[in-house]
Structure formats: C-alpha cells, structure tokens
Length: 414
Image (spheres, rainbow, N blue to C red):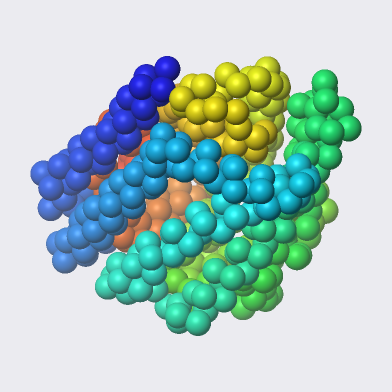
C-alpha cells in the first residue's frame, strides 16, 4: 500500500507539471497573437509583457511545487512524520496540549518554508513587472500578523475539536462538524470588522456619486449592504480587485483603490453587478452547502479510519497519534479529490457565466462589463492564451477572451 500511495502522489504531481508544461508551450505558440476582443487595447509590447509575466510566474510555480512535493514526500514517506509525532508526545503529558502544539508548530514550519518563495515572488517577479509597492517592513508586518491570526484560529479549532472528541468519543465527528460550521459562520461576521482592518485601511468611497450608483444597483437587485468602502490596496500591490465580505447585516462591498483608478464608474458598477449575480443566483450559498456536505462526509469517514493503525500502516509506519493520523487523512483526501478538480472547476465556470449574464441583465451595459474585463486583464497581465486542457482543469473562471466574446455577442443580439 505504501508503494501504491507513493506512486499515486508522483502521478498527481507529474500530471500537474505536465499541465503547466502544456500551458507554457501553448503560450509560446500563440502568445504573439492579439485576440480580436483585445484589438486596440493591447499592443504587441503589452502582449510580450503578459507572456513574460505568465512564463516567469509559471516557471517559479513549478520550482515551488517541486520543493513542496519533496518536503511532503520526506515528511510522509521518509519517516519525518513519525519522528515529529514522537517528539511532540515527549513535550507534555497532555494529549490536549500535544495536539495544539502539533498543529501550531506544523503551521509555523509551513509558513517559514514559504518565506523565501514569498520574498522572491514579491520583491523579484512582482517588482520586475511593476506590481509590488510593498516595503520589506510592511511585508514582514503582514507575515507576523498572518502567523498570529493563523495560530489563534488554529488553536481555537484544534482545542475545540479535541475537547469534543474527549466529550463524545462515539459521535465526535458530528459535533466537530457542527463546531467547525458555527465557527466559519462566526468568522464571516467578525472578519470584516476585526481581521480585514488589520491589513487594509477602510475608507468611504472617494469617487463622487459612485456610492449612490452602487446602492441603486443593490436596490434593483433586492440586496442590502451595510457599507461601501475603498481600501488602500495600492500600499501593497498595483493589482486590482473588488469583493463582497461579511454576511447578513454586516455584508459590505469593498473596492481596491487601484480598481477605482483604472476604471470608469460604469465599469465598476458592471463588475459589482457580476458579484451581485453570485449572491442572487445563490452560488455562494450553494458552495457553502457543498463544502459543508463534503466536510460532514469527510469527518464521518475520518471517524471510521482513525481508530486503530490502518492509516499509519498505509505509509509503513507504526502507531501514531490522532493528530498524525489527521495529517495522513489530509494527504489521502488530496489524492482522492485530484480527479474531481476539472469537475469542480467546470461548475465554477458555469456560475461565472451565469453571473456575467445576470450583470448584463441588471445593468443593461454589456459593453461596460466587457471593457472592464479587458482592463482587468491588461492591468493584471493576465494570460490571454491558456491551453484549453489547462483551463478546463484549473480555471475557476472562464478564459477572459471567451467571457468577452460572449458579452459582445449578447450585446449585438440586444
């Protein structure tokens, strides 16, 4: 079984590398071609920058993925997991505190191993293409904040789960699922006011008249938002974005200041109308339900596999702690879910198309939506020529050229 799992992981890793290779080869063949949908908006020099940026990011991603794969193989198949598990067990005599330490130190190690890649990506690649505006001090402060927040949330989740396991040894999986569900809903409420302001400065919209237009859009859609903000994303990057955050009465709209600098009011309204489409079409609710059903089934299966030594024996190991078995389960689930990736991506792309249609119906401005996508792609140097198989496997959004083509065809048919 150990050899079979080893081969399965190598196959999954190799498949990911092959798909990236296909994507880069496709870009080399077609990267010089300006799609008709971008004619007049993207010149050859910009197209060359898009290709260079995509290639550099992809190659760096391959190096990072290879490093992660080697670390994971050593950790699981090289005996490091068993050594780490025994070391943690010797620290305290408490299964409760051992579990928290196991998770926190693993989280810290994962974060520290990612530091060189984050530094190179931000201060080499993003700098080279004019995106990074972050100082080294700000990067470090963000890293520390992220580690502290991640540690606190992880400690709460692990402590709660371990307490529930001790309280209900036979039905722990159900109570843990309820606890995780409740905690995720709690985070949706507190994140907009407690966590996100730790990284961004939230301010009222500075563009005159835009907030009124946004509120009118929400009213037409039958949605209510508590506030509309812009954030100082330009302190970190010139990439642009907009998003909904929160739930219920704390639901709010957040616009990057970079987006406001790049787009007209019509384009901003069209982008937000697309996000509204996800709420009105219940895409967000459906994704939450699918995630929770998967979590419910996953925890039930975990309750069947964790007792005994079945999981350690799969890796040729002796008895392990509950926490080490959870790590093995996480690894197995990644192998099982890999073949489902294209299906999940296809469902996500279907929702994106539906939200595009909703935005056009709500605003009556297909041209504004199309021009917004052109600007987003141009300003963010998005790949205009992804390989069809790579896009089918990994893209949660339809390729931008396809989206714009459908928007223009809808505009002509009106």
